[in-house]
Image (tube, rainbow, N blue to C red; front, side, top):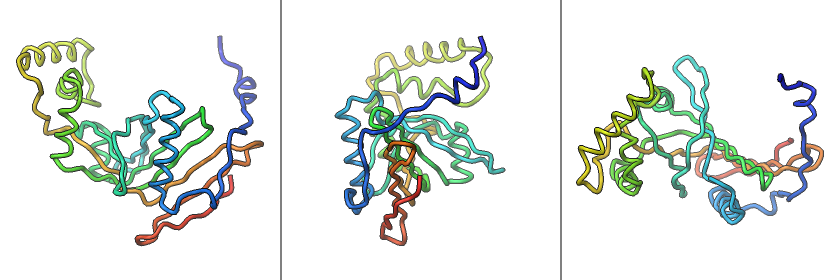
Length: 217
């Protein structure tokens, strides 16, 4: 049965959970992110670290997908992936990146814009070896974003790798796999409010100083 467009158009919620004022936020957006992220964890939101990242190709065509945040500090936000994947190739050509976190239960979202840079080999290696062995095998087994004839290719790669490294606690890190750190130039905190008059507090980096402004919803 085809979904009625009027049904879709009628979908709406009136957000009333919290408010967000400039006087309430930290001067540093990383501290503000830390506070909100901890609240998301305390609320037991499933995979609170899930984030949409958007990249562009050489022709400026955008693409977006979900990845998992694996760390953050004053220098930025870290995720890991296959460098030969579509997003890896796009970031190699154009390091500009946009990020969105959505925490629906808290009626919140966070937008981040910045530049993605590869982390050091040591950081990637330490994280790679902290992953379950099955995930390490998966990083080797999958030629991410490439066309494959069928799933059996992946399954056979996994079997071969399990046999090859059956006596090893860790696999060597693939040369095509590692982390990116997103160095933010803009971070926006969005709190849902009634009648779509949402609170939007935006931090923009000017030199080494963060400028804080309220945006109209």
